Length: 147
Picture (tube, helix red, strand yellow):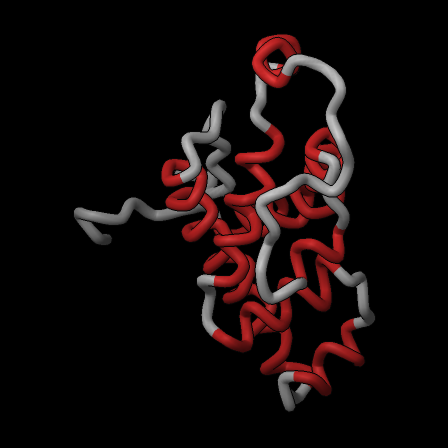
């Protein structure tokens, strides 16, 4: 047991990351005016994908979440993971490609790909925690489940 890093419930953490990509991220993208393709692009542009005619501060108060900052945190979290993890996260969770397609992209066997996928999800969970703080996201979403 590590004194600095408490044990996490790995199964629950993997479920949290998967759920975040499937359920929360599409809503965040809609709220921020972004597209899924923005997350896989080499650089996230400063301007949102669509214009916002409302008062941005009022929207944040109503929704209780800064969707733009959260999407930027997702982008940075993905793009600061290891190379294979970045490919897996973008292609599997963002572009929704099949396991087989992504497995070939990282030149992996089936057993190893399962391990690489889990590692990518853990990397994202750790990275996302950091990047939410950098982008001053509210609330901070902790995808890691501490046992």
